[in-house]
Length: 82
Image (cartoon, rainbow, N blue to C red):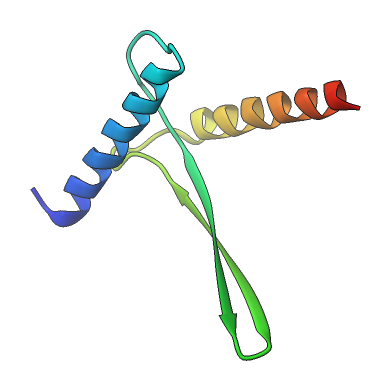
């Protein structure tokens, strides 16, 4: 197993572990992780956005659906807070 493949396996295992803590049931079929990295160089502030999906190809419509659903949930939470 390559280092990259092993890292993705650890990530997927971690997603399953956290999902179990949140009482998710069933088989994990797709996932998307979005992260932001900040860099500070001299007087410059740089942000890099990283999107991770499983090494096996996830169709674009599945990725977009997951992201749209998450965005909808956040918008609902924001509207409830106001």
